[in-house]
Amino acid sequence: MTDLPGSLTGERHDLGNGSVAWGPCHVGMDAVIGADCSIGALAHVGSEAILGDRVRVQGGAYVASICVLGDDVFVGPNATLLNDRHPPSRDRAKWLPVVVGEGAVIGGGATVLPGVNIGERAVVAAGAVATKDVPDDEVWGGIPARFIMSRADYEASRTSREEA
Image (tube, rainbow, N blue to C red; front, side):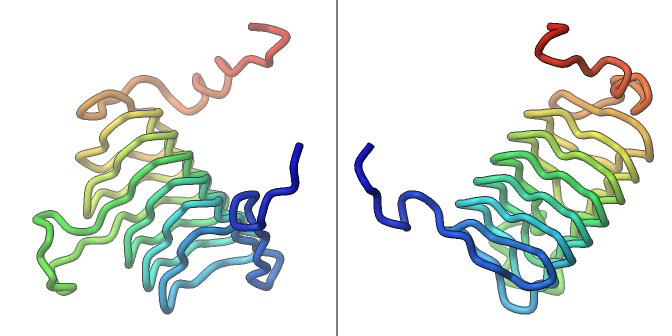
């Protein structure tokens, strides 16, 4: 393999407090990044967004300005958390944050609409579109997202590569 420039291989940027961002990515002005977080390459974390401790934002994900992610949240690759119900409003007073509770999972390619709250330990399945609040400990999927199972059933259904 030939040596590639850092911009192609992804550069590690220490954000302090054990957190890291992999370039290229964007972290907006006045964003608050908790301890031991990871922000993937090509991810966008908007201005004034708040990420709790141990949050993982995978590559290509978009977390809009003013969104709030609790501790231990996982945001899958290319997931999108929006803030503007009628873009482009150009009026921050009309923006509604997505609020994601502790331990929640937003699957790859999922979209969460402005003002939607994702409960603690809830899961929004890959590719789903969350148009309304998702309660604690529930798994929702589809377009629009709807209840699929409990988080306990989700955890019980997880298999290892050897079991599949």
